[in-house]
Image (tube, rainbow, N blue to C red):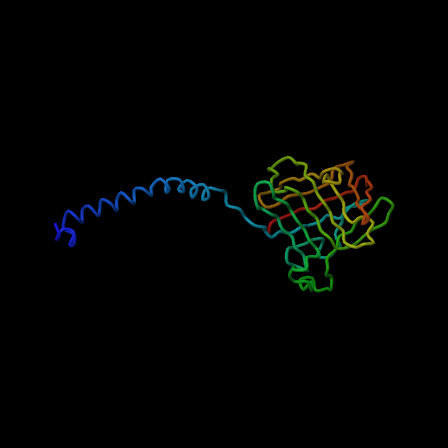
Length: 225
């Protein structure tokens, strides 16, 4: 008995193995709980960050939003200080976004156009004939969710820089109001955006005052690079 206690024999080794097996089996319920969590995380849809794009503006006659004329009205991501992207972060956030005054944007010397045109700008022609031109940006909400075929209504905001601006922003169906724009999916990588005939845009001044602009024309396309 003394020898068996100090020097494990065959039976002692077998007993030790059984105890280890029982101890490991005792951990299995915890493993069974965590396993589904790992599977669920892996099963979530993969998200994709912003995709580089370009905005091509069609200059409109009369009251409306137009380009600054540089590069034929094209605003391409990372060219001449432009940030142009379509976000695919999740199924509820697929905005088309154009920024003309992002301080982190690349190529702010407008090398591609060979002229000193930084920062790029947008022009707004008002019903009284006044034209306001300044840098800013455009955001089309949930543009990427539009299906192929018929146009769908989406909200759009236009930001205009400058404290002396008549409108610091224009709202098309956003929080400030106005008529939504029509977005048509032209292809898997391209969308057209246009204002509604007879629609309105809400002008928000730098002071916060609002006014309504009738028939403010908008026409541009967004294409992934």
